[in-house]
Image 1 (cartoon, rainbow, N blue to C red):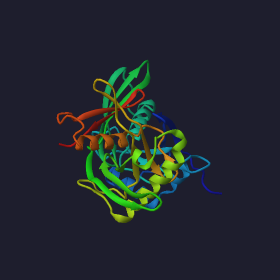
Image 2: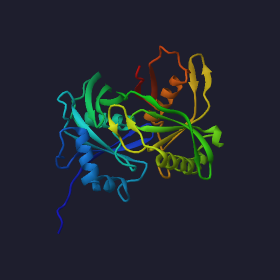
Image 3: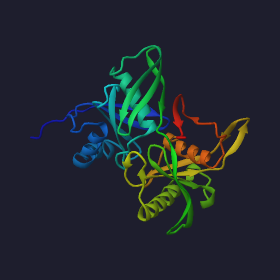
Image 4: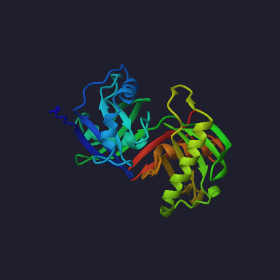
Length: 297
């Protein structure tokens, strides 16, 4: 009889995204950093990701975050992000969910009002600010990775779609940025399946043509995501609204506002001069949760 495996889990939620946090039951992983531990898990023990994301225990739209010991003594905990597409080195919604779980599990003791602490992602340290009211975690703010433009307005021939114009931005992952109207999309719920099929075709075409490398983090895997951008409309003085949809895996359009995808969009808008040059920060809201986005100078 095989040995019984008991894993401690906590399900969390941020803006439509469900993240299952593994808080205990997994043996320590080899590696002198969270990223090294992630690479070991990816290359030698991918069964945990498959177990928790595939049926009957999970679905493709979910994410899993494994708490691990941090390598930096300043961090309260480390975490490894697992999604159906693999192992992103950073994710805004996963960070928000992990920070919530760290507080709710007592790994970081709750304090009424605002409190700050650090987590260690595979991409490095992440600053967290939490708001606790009456013993409940009401809001989490996390600092995203610096976003930048890798490719601006390139074109590629895509089977069934023709010539597609795209940009590529990094914001915790590489994103292909595509104007939705140029492909005839209004970004409505009834288009979800067609959006996923079109995005998959574009991503496959880009992956076949070139690879991408981060300027300091090196190889972070093939381009996995595509962000469809809707028209930007002024709704009040200094306030704008735009629909968007983010493809994250064959058949899967992200359920949340996708903080890293929104960060990539903001970086592109900044690159194209749509923000005043002195603006370096924008807030992307997940209900009460907030992702802080920064652009490198």
